[in-house]
Image (cartoon, rainbow, N blue to C red; front, top):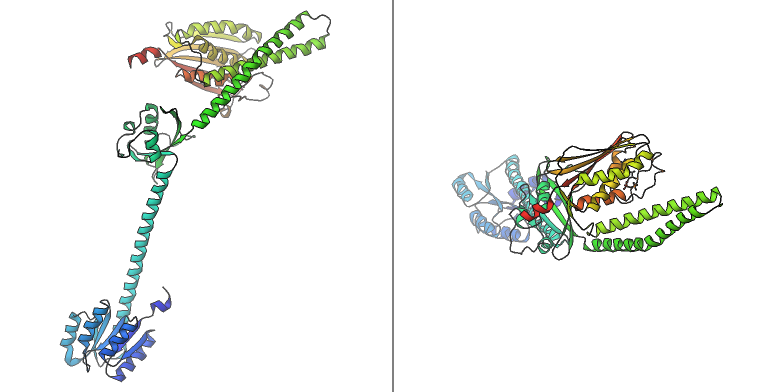
Length: 502
Ligand code: ADP
């Protein structure tokens, strides 16, 4: 508030000029602007024209008396502070005036100090009154701001093109926006408040939302995600985050659903394109490979150098053929029609065959390749035998490739918690944790002095992961540089029977 607004305007109404002038002198020194009137009528007229906040008014005056002036002034402004000036003889009337709403009174004759005290008190009251008013305005403004802010945030959430659902720590829905309702066919009049599984059918997603709501993923390196397909062939990616209070307590979860159908379709197109190109290249390359092999075998007198060049060309075509084979496998897995003839298989028996087949390769590096079955009677796994061969063929070949000469490779099968567990352990080159995180990505290869010369495509483990996932299995890796690696695969047993019994 500026100094000018703080300045009080005081009106003195008294029929005695000396008193009026005396008051004016004292009040001016108190930084007041002073108006003077000799009658009640003049005083009321001045009051109407100016914004006066304090009135000093004599009780006994010719014309209308002080009580009447007080009554009329309060009619115009009921908050006006009127100080009645009265003689000793009329003290009773002064008390009456107080009852009528006068703010204070001062008895004639008075000392300047007495006037200062009475007017000072009135000014203090005015100051507090103004302050209270300013605070009230501020409070109302803050409330209005808060209200606007709240409705603004709600409007933003409502109009987001992504689905949003918020749950409390128990996994009960507290908010859903229109996009979320639309995606999951939840009618507008269905209130939030119930557990998430009453709104969404997908069990895996509900499980994840419950976990995030309880704060189980708070320290995870990556934001938990979940992909789901809706009946309308729409692909959604759900990403979630715990909502934490200031003290770190988990209050619930916020989930955002993004439509990734276009991305999925694009990815599928890309896979189809790669598969087509790979398919077109495979036959001519196989022919070139065979012809090179024939030329090398038949050619007489072409010289050692030329023979070496042809052999290298033959090896290169072989690598290209295996790259193409890998690409086609991957395309098949990504398209969801991986090895498609599942039957009851004994993983241990298939593994015996693979180990037998790869023994020669291990022996060429003087490595010991062994297999141990911890359970004599292995349960059946329902899978395509070709997929099982591809998984463990890749893992054991890698163990041989990434282990030095004279190393050890041990394959173990067991049954653990109702799943078949197969470990492929080597004491080879191993790798850092940072690589372990990446090796299932397509084309990822660890390149260091020991592995640089080893030929590979970086696709084998993506194929392995794709196949294991498709079987609802799990793969884990433990590895230490220069000490070796252990790849462990868990496969569910007799999946078909479980499905039938549901
Ligand atoms: P490729 O062997 O064709 O390069 P993979 O996808 O099978 O491709 O493997 C990816 C990378 O993971 C390899 O390049 C290698 O660096 C690392 N790797 C795989 N298996 C092992 C292992 N048993 N020991 C050490 N490193 C391995």
